Length: 73
Image (cartoon, rainbow, N blue to C red; front, top):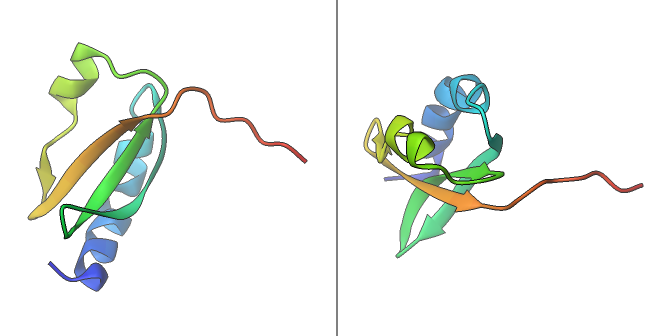
């Protein structure tokens, strides 16, 4: 999977992912040598694990629990 293709897939699904409760951000990353979609969540719940897909259009989805994100400045 190329980074460019994963970027296009994320662009198509970004708003849907961000609309889910507890999701605070999304992005692209590399895990185990493969490009993936990263979904950052405040708290990982069983329900959220069920709702979030493992793959989107062939791109792996990795969930990372990050807690509350605050802007400083």
